[in-house]
Image (cartoon, rainbow, N blue to C red; front, side, top):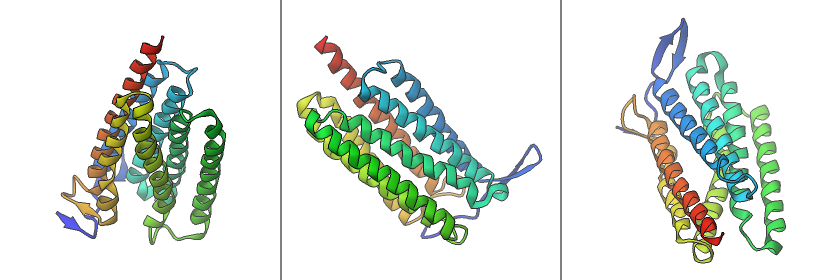
Length: 235
């Protein structure tokens, strides 16, 4: 186990290509697969209901961010830091859809204002991230590229997986508790990534983070399923 620095990147060959970090490639694609399955499951529920429609879009974009993130890790020898750009930008977009899903359950007079704030946050985050790509040396300090997506995620998660679900569980169904439980599971990622806590070369900080994100997604699905059951009781 090491703290404060990373293990040397694992190299491997595949089809004549010299690739890196097979462990990160595998766990990213596991998350991509789980997100795609979640997307199709939510999509089949009710696309006329914005709650389910936007949760589906969140999983779609969240999954794509992991797919491109995995490729960025594996093909770093060929793509360099540019291979990480797509995953970072898509991850910012995914948080917007999460916010839309949860904000749409607010009282009608509040919805337009807070969705407007969410749109401003999305555009601002994308612009800031693009400026960072064009003006900063991410090769020398890759963590700079994670700053904007991390801040965007923190705001979105704390609001839409923390405060709003706690409020909604009294208004709709107690199943919303699974959303803030998913936030509690996710929070240790800030320390794992910030302190660079890795156990083994084949199970580093990114892999540990991905395990927590997997649990987060499963808890979110329980919250979505609970809200679906609540909607059915109203019919």
